Image (cartoon, rainbow, N blue to C red; front, side):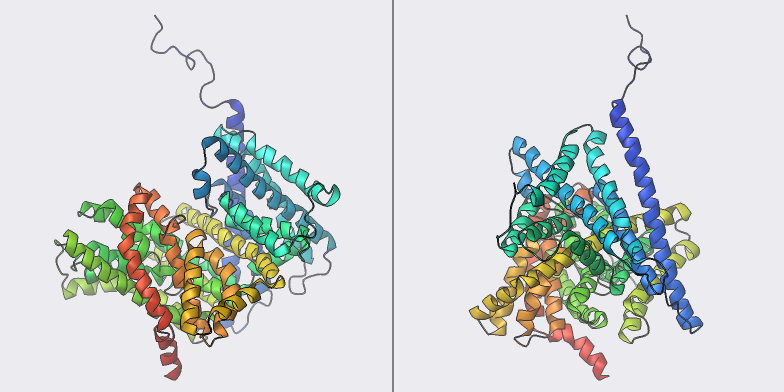
Length: 632
């Protein structure tokens, strides 16, 4: 009889995954560490340069002349270095609901086509980046470096991305052929399209090719940024005006504006605040304020999201944080898991409306509007949305008997909670006030927020050590890269839309239906609601703002007011199927079925739609605070 110790392991036989799979896992793990380290170091250098420039300008009346350009070059490196990591971690934003409805055999083929789209876009970027480097001349005056250095990271990271794609199936032990086959097919397409004439798109309408290619790639579950790049490259084959080298240059220039440097800073500040336990102080303060209301824990969820909005600007991070900290508390106190997740997801819309909002930063960059004015305009709509959610929660709690056990906190308890939360709340006041009164730029405010959050979290409260700090920076670099890549991919996409007269045609269609601003705003809202259901808010802002802003402002609608309508409207897409990213985040992190959360979301969505109508048709909600300050 064999002993208990007999078996493959006891006999010295190999157990576990096959050797090729383990080798692929080891290679990818090493590449993860390398690219993650370099991306985080680039982010640290970016923070250090801008902070040194701020200290020099305000402390010694002497700024670094090369700081802005160096920071922009470094941000390009952050974007392209962290993209392979994000792809490996499945962090790209994509739509997979259509593929999931296909039969099993067709699902595999659709996933192969999605990999082919990614590989083709990557190959085109690879060769486009190489062509751009070969043709660029000149030297940066302030950095004293050849201009091509700014773009040198692109071919390297494209090759790295192809390695990730090739090994992805091997390291998982399934679909071993898919990645290599997609890469070979992508190279074959690259060489065949202009040379052999087997695939000839010349003579087709570039705008039609752009739209069909983009929607088709999205339907396959391709990440949004790669779907836009794929559409741009195919439209060029049909006679567009963006050859690969020009696409790469437009992409880099579109994602490396100095204003956009504020995005990685606020993402990093939010990560450091979370790691430092500073957000729990906000939640405690919120509990002392509204925990005694009917539906107390749900009310705390909403108020803490509004407070968190003043330091983060990221709805996704707020949804993740609320899922970890508040959903378990709500469930323990008798709230259903689906309702707890629905409230968390709905309240997570507030950080992208209340300043400092990353969505409003993106809107400012694409529309050339003032960041300070947009941020001030976001306060009123954010309060209206929060109030609508609190009223809805109150009504639901009364009907279901939620939240009857919490006692009202005394003034002394509220005072202590307010004192603990003051250092965090003070940051929001300094950011908004500093930008509004011209003391700092949004980028400078972002880097000061990073330093402030680091001092409080690591040096004052000692909530994390050097290892924890490094993990925060690495995660922030990846998240910033995703946003930067999306903005970069949208730049050539939007350029082709304008060249092909798509915005002008859409504006003419809308104004042709009615010249009444009330009707036009209703039609535009309906259009944005449809797009918001299938697009991430960042991608939707980048695509829809150039299309809709000219048509609406031509009718006399204030662009700042309409900018808030865009953001509020598109945020609701994070709560609706089929995409509903905020719902998927809360459901995944709390292990709650997503379809249950969507059902629980209906009354909360109704409250937010009512708030959207108020914000749309009462401009004073968005413009009142700014006008009050300007008048004062």
